[in-house]
Structure formats: C-alpha cells, structure tokens
Image 1 (spheres, rainbow, N blue to C red):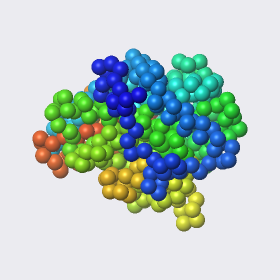
Image 2: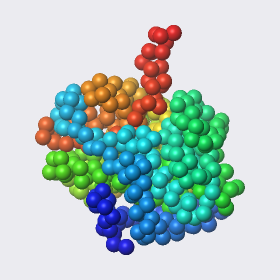
Image 3: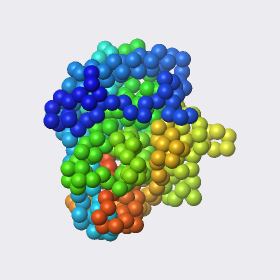
Image 4: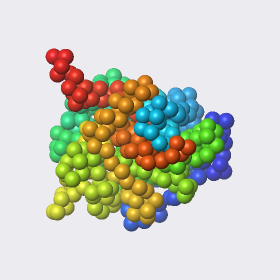
Length: 417
C-alpha cells in the first residue's frame, strides 16, 4: 500500500506514513519501552503485529476512514475565534473543534482504531481505563457498535465528579467498575485495568486511552489521533494560506497533544506547546505537571517523566480536570521535550475556569476543563504576538461533563440551595 494512498476526497488530507517511529523495542530516545508482567508480553507483541498488519491493509483504512467520516463526524471544523482573539489581544486564535465529534471528544478517533484491531484479532471483550470519562464513553460506544462485552475501570473520585459520563457508559451497556485504591483517580484505574488484563488477555483487548503505556500503545494511540493535526494542517492552509505560528494542546497522558502536534513536528516554523495542569500552582506541589516537575522513571509499562517522591513512590496529583489528573506523560512527549522540539506551559485551576467562561461568553462554545487549560495558555501566548500571527489550539472536548464541577467552583450550586 502506498503511504499516501487516498480513498476519497475526505481521505486525501491523511498521510498514512508512520513518521518518527520508535525503535524495535518501542523507545523514543531513552523513553518508552515495554515494561510489563511476563503474562502480558505475548499479548503486547500480538497487538503490535496486528497493528502493523492492519496499517498496511487498504481494507482496514477504508473501513476506519469510513467510520471516521460517517459515524464520528470527521473532518471536524477549524474555527477562527475572532471575538476570543480580540478578548485576548494579539494573534488570531483558531480552534480545532474535536468537541464536535460523536461522543464529544477526540477519544473516539482512537477507540475506533483499536476497536477495529480487537475485532480483527477475534476478541469478544474490551476493557479500558478512564479519568474524565470521555475515553470510557468512546470505548463503550465502539463496544456497543461492534457487539462486544465492555468493562470500564474508573476511580471513585472521578466517578463522583464525572457522573454524567458514568451514566452514559452504563446506558451504552458497559460495566463501570469503581476503583478505590490509591487516590481513586486515573492512575489507579490504569493499575486495575492492567491487573484484569493479566488474568483475561486470551479473550480481552485492552483499549488504552492515552499515548502512554507499554509499547506498542504510544505508537497506536498517536497514529489513530494524527487525523486531528493532519486535518488542521490542511484546513489552516486552505483558510489562511499558511501554517500556524504556534500549535497548543493540553497534556495529561498526551493523546490529543500527539494528535495535534505530531503532524507539525517537522515544521520548524511552528512552535509546539504542551500545557500541563498546574492545579493550585506548581510551587504548591498540588498539580499534575509531570513534564515540568517530574523526573524519569517507569510508570504503567514505559519509561517517561513522572511525579514521584524521594523514595521513588508515585505521588498524588491534583487538577480540577479529571482528564489531566495523571502523574505521568507519554514517552514521545518526554522525548520531544528532551530533544528541544516541545515547549512547556501550564495553567492553574483558576486560569482554566476563567478561560472556560471567556470562550463560552465570547463564542458560545463550552469547552471541557481539559481544553480550557490549553485555552488559558494559548491566550497568554497570543497576547505576546502580532495580530497577523496564528495560534492553533486543540479544543479536545466539550464541557457538558464538567458542569457540576464548574458550578461548584463558581459557587452557583450553593447559591441555588
């Protein structure tokens, strides 16, 4: 199959060549790898083989792209947020509208791809971890469409603050399993999902939700999400005749960030910015900024930057956003930071809330709290730039799921009682 194979006009913007691939062991520089229980080594290798076989199969891409277009709703719009641009001042802000996908976030790009792999491998059951619930909803959606059994592991803390997504998963037929260990958030949900997979890998496919984990997951997730940046690249060229000066995405594990940023990686003129959750402020220790404040270590099957204490124990994290509340980051992002291709920024809880309200009131778009971190940092960056420059921000999801959290922090629920 030609790497530039085209199926329809819709598909012509997608480049199927795997660029900046990891080495045979799954390493991006010194990061990545495959650190897993012996029981999982063979399943991981089987998934790797199935992925490369599928990636070189025209029929796989034909079905995947058909689903992305007709089921997911791709290509998502690229929107010039003129009023928001004036509010921040400086550069023109363009929003990649992943909030308009089916299920309301970018996560469906990846679950479509991995769901097709699971079916191709003959698996009847899928499992997943979820934090904000969007990956869980996307996994449950694909499982319903393909007729698969589905179990979703979710920290009880995250269940409490993301109850609308818990209800959506259950309505879709998934079994949502509460996780009470540790901080009862995303890290602990991953741990429990991995434990279950060890015992059930013969008939179960683990649909991993972010560009982290043991090889080949960082590569799989990145490749299934590059549709974001490839579309944005074609759209910005069509609308403005040029590439953006800056591309910005929020970072928890890194799925939406790799999806937007990777297609611009070889464009030296485009600054790539990853925005982490600063929580109450990085100096307070109550944050989830693994790239800015972490150090190299092994977490969930890969070597990456993570937050750990002096004894090497993984630290608890804090973010108003459940999807960014994770103590590690994908290995390719760690490598891009170390090689100097990635710039860091961060937004506090309060800054994210402010950005959410600003976009909502200036453009009539309610973003997810995860995306609001990217908006806060992107707006700061735009202020330092000229009016003829462009800042591209990935709006990774919509804010319906966060209304209870937002209203509580704004004090609106208390005022109504």
